[in-house]
Image 1: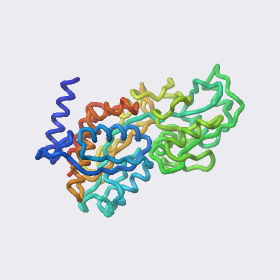
Image 2 (image 1 turned 90 degrees about the vertical axis):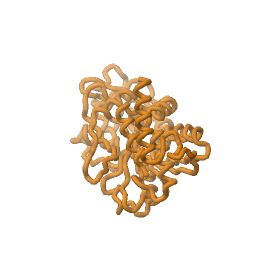
Image 3 (image 1 turned 30 degrees about the horizontal axis):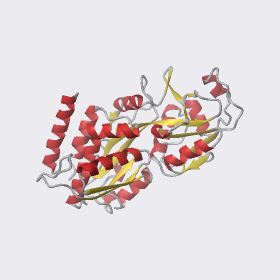
Image 4 (image 1 turned 180 degrees about the vertical axis):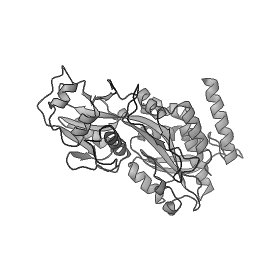
Length: 360
């Protein structure tokens, strides 16, 4: 494993040197990096970004990395509008969002598109706070019915049928969703739409599509609202669940907890999206929400969105070096320790690191 990792890093370093910067933080001429790098985006990956920034700054003391976890939608908007060097987003930018025409106000070179680079995998936990219920099981149809407002009591027969032996209270369900434009919401509603299409008829969207329920801003807001409520249920990055109850979701004939291993497995079972104007260095992945086996289907794959080519070469060097480190085996393991995320597989890590090394 050590030899394979060393080989991957060596190959990526060569590719980076060809492009002008090495993942370790030095330019081709050997000069140290310096300057300020600004990222805005997904709050789900805030802990991972804090870890990456701290590690990168330790290796490169003349660099400051600022990441503001304002949400995926805010990150994409800031990137397109020229307010950030890169965005963090729990969904990839769409083909129409990464064209040169759509990015005229951004920091990208006028002739270039943006690229989506997957850097963070995490299961989205269905979190709940119901006294006396410590092991909740839900299937896609029941979960969709709860968040669509069609099931309103915790002792509803549909929930009871999945939780034989558990005493469910005659208590109103308060379903909590994100108030902001959120990639976590888009991933969650994508699962509901694909796994329970007869119940969840709304298209996947980063903005909550239905009336009712209770809204809270960002990941921390949803967790706080569920924690401080009674009979509450919500969805959030699994690493932020804390002491809340976490539901098991039915996959095939079994119920699966949101583990890092099961989240990584569904990414590996999914396909890369090509065409539609995406460059060869774009790594958008279409998640297979209905895959079976030892997988967890409600997962977010968070992306770093960057310019293929920047107007400012100095900015390009910083982005290239930082994202190459983030995608590397070392960067992934650094964040696993703090954010409890699922690391990219060794192959995907090498592919994304090589793509980051083409930034100029």
